[in-house]
Length: 181
Image (tube, rainbow, N blue to C red):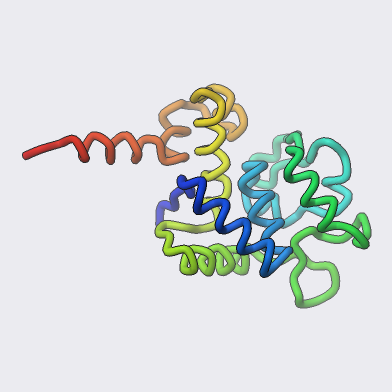
């Protein structure tokens, strides 16, 4: 199994968002939901229009079976409102083009993310990249509040969380840049 990485560069994130917004609204919303909520892909794909109409997304996580409540950020709220215009409450947000009201599968989500990776020359990208990108950004934007991020991800150790979001790798890379043999 490959170990995927977060997207660390804010400029690349903005370029990806701009590209997806112009080319594919569904994929844009999937990307935005992932980097703004930190939900696993299995939970993102199950979201329906009715799940995002309030101030929070409330759900039972598929993997952990734990209840989760996530505030919908203002940017995400604005984009979701535009995206769901004309859609019914029972419709899936990330619909497949095959069949009536079915979400895309995890393998299709992976293909979409791989296409993005190829277009933007990114390595180590997969379904967990969106969740890890959220964690990486959250960690840096909250003055490195690892405790809060651990709660968010239901992790039991700081070390696991730091490794998960790629901080451990960043630290090793920085140390090796200064290393001389």
